[in-house]
Length: 435
Image (cartoon, rainbow, N blue to C red):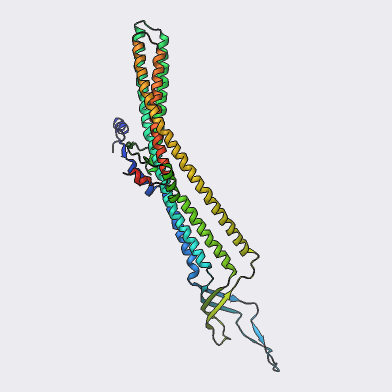
């Protein structure tokens, strides 16, 4: 088989990489259903489900099957209560080597709620893990929205950097034309060259920033990091009309962290009851079958049934210590819930204020862009007429670039603040941005 020509290989390598389009709605569905953190939360839920089954095990009988071979140094014998002249004073009662096997089943009848409390605590833990899945979906949704907006912003900043290079290149042509006409000195041409080179470096930085944010999007979508992403613009503004009081009420009613804390408190209350039940007796029944190899016994196998009660009279202080620890942890959880509630309210207010200030920045930067564009137009006109300087034109280009960059940053800063505010208010981001 002949190797492919080098020219053909280069053609394949230089073919443009097709970009896959992605909308915010499509991305949100992927990260909230298949994201790594969501899958981790689902695994934790499965483990908690197993914990419930484990806690229920005392309600079912425990069955043990056993077998053993025994070797004794001395054969067991029993002394006779009387002596016979010329005969031994003892008789064997067992072999010095024998086989034993059997099966035994034990069932707890009543333990004064110890098992019930353990099962209830496990169920609350399972509910907490289920709530955690929802919380991880919200976190994944917010993270994707922020990353998606970052990518859109980087595209706009890349466009601004490209336009800046174009403007400096246009001015360089003007300076070279005027230099060739003998109107200006070589110094102005060199000044334009240096500024243009610096602008091209900023363009490279903008390209790298977009590439990095593109890779992060691919990571969240579980795609190869080097895939080219073509995001669509976001038009929705779902936070419109959501007041601070409404956001507070929504956060307090729907916060998964508060719900998880509530489940943790309920689980700890059940744990306290379970440890207290260790002071009370446990009633049980047990039965089984056992065979023991012994030729001196009339019946080598036997069936047995036992009904009994056990109570822990003293365990070295372990039961009281466990109860004290559980009560202290319960009080800590209740205090933590109060602290968490204040923290949630502060988080909502901080996001609300950030949203308000971001909205004001948009209006300010829009005016600045229009003014910078007019300033650049006038400076170029003055330069062509010979009444302006190169420095004035270069400064005007820099001002316009700064104004445009600030405008895009304020716009996407507002959109990020909006998503953060909605998340703090515990709103369904997938539903709101999927419309």
